[in-house]
Length: 116
Image 1 (spheres, one colour):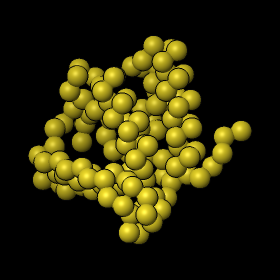
Image 2 (tube, one colour):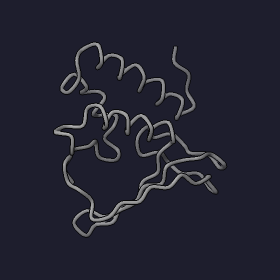
Image 3 (cartoon, helix red, strand yellow):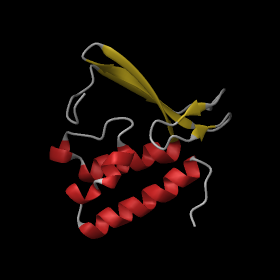
Image 4 (cartoon, helix red, strand yellow):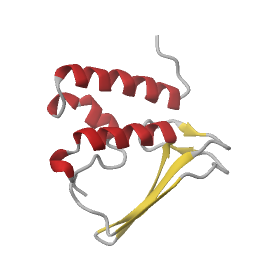
């Protein structure tokens, strides 16, 4: 999958977790009872399904809306951390630092950590 491939189909829901899942973005645990994003679809006949904390999904959507390349491309599932690390490639320096700081907070919260 590249940054610009369109899925053959895509569906996104926001259920309450009935069991624990692992967030594909921050690596943290989605706990029982928590609302999360369940995203599924297919690329070139290969099916996928991903779980994301709601905050991680919202942040990824914001980044994709504001800085999606060519207006059609997006950050693939599981690549948000890498994209934010390399934010200087697509955002102004002050925006890149802001994105990196916000992602650090969201990621730490998803992992149940505190920032010092």
